[in-house]
Image (cartoon, rainbow, N blue to C red):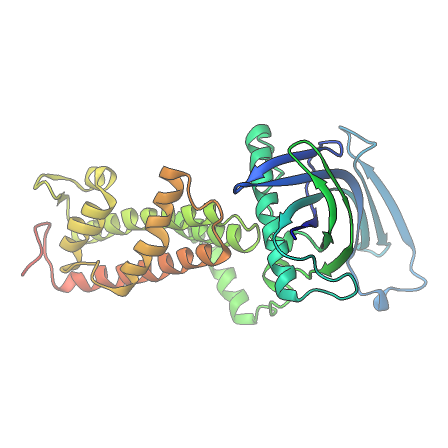
Length: 371
């Protein structure tokens, strides 16, 4: 006998839908979602409570959002020293509880024992897929930038319930819960930074030298950091893949241009046999046939595609990015997909840099590579 599963998530964004219920089809089966969105208070303590000074003078300041004083209040408590030390803060945040229900084949788990973690993981993953689809549809309608497509770590608590007695059709859902199982999730170290060691003196000196020298921050570096952040912190794996591949294209154009400048090359010969000024050739050239093909080969003195790093990049970054951009695919891209795209781009850019440097001793001028 089939049974009903319900998964309850709590996410740190607001869907102002006034406890609405939505019933829709997902992958050929019905799903129901109920949304409860509300404001909540978040209490943050900045110091170890054991280190608080018992007799210190403390002051409380209350700040209200001028746009809506009734909805956003922030309270600061700090110790009055020569330099005030903030001890704690309470502020208003938005949270949304999303309950998703769907049918599952097979018998309902027993009421008097906790299901296996494998089963709970499977149900949570199934519920999350439906929630992500729902949130994408909501964002598509509202264009609200504060709402993100959530991942499991975005909900600090997840409840899984099962029901044998229920009525579920295209317009109505009613059920009697048989059992509920709650799981608390701690945020990952990557999200909180808890496990990061304190930077040593050498690292601080290096940063200070870079600041004093006004070392430019490259677009490639920023794109790769953003791609990693989108995947690790925000679970936006599709956009992470797109940014990783974009970083490769930016790197390649700028690296080829730098190499031409260093060698005094003014023109590059494309696959058509036509020679163009370097900037025009790089901006108009095809990534695969020109930039990674003819142009890179002219400068490296060899193919830059006959290596494992190229194969990994093509498989994990180039093709997935095409699937996302041109076909709207990889809707359920995973964290592993985002990680592999990022890693493949990092590895291939390093190889390209080495090959171009090595090519200085094997090639000359702007003509075809020496045989």
